Length: 256
Figure 1: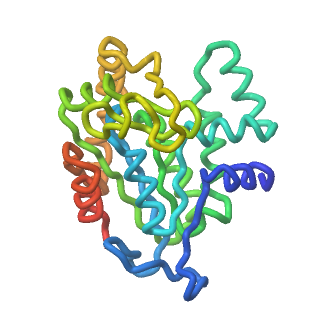
Figure 2: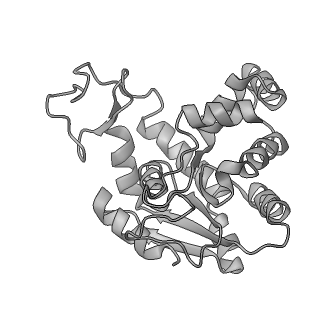
Figure 3: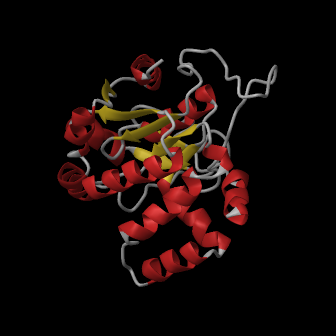
């Protein structure tokens, strides 16, 4: 587990930004702040291109909590050579989905680590009701009867805008910087502002594939809205605006 944690930290998957004035768990008092010093556990979900990756990374810095991106976490665990990583790799190499129970083991190992003792911001898990139920059980085991703040944030975006974000999305093959030909235009046509190399479009950033991804989201992930609403932990935010507008809506939604 120590090896996995080191890889996650080195790659920026697990990060903790603490107020340099006092490193004994005193976080910055910005737009968002801790509630009574209790561990804060935040799950963010939304359709493809909803912008949650950008916002959760920023929220991680503001709250001083690790941002756990499921895709990056899985790649790091595979690179670690751990038992879970080897098992996950065996499924991926066969073109199969990693089983939910194995994903849950990887998630639990991460959330139980010292880096997450004050909470976390989870992006990409849960993706369906089965995973949501497993996450509840994982949190119960980790908390062992202690209090914590749990909140689920739902990013709401119109289907038309989501499609525009996807088909116009471009990325730098060198640094990974993301652009959009309509909403975040590079200074030079189709060229990265940082690396000055030709921008690329992902093979799956087409209208046809995007529509299929939307259908999958509606069938599997959208039911989480009712699941967390019934628990009383859901906050839905308008994610149709600019990055700053969505950030404002997100910080307003975060429980204090």
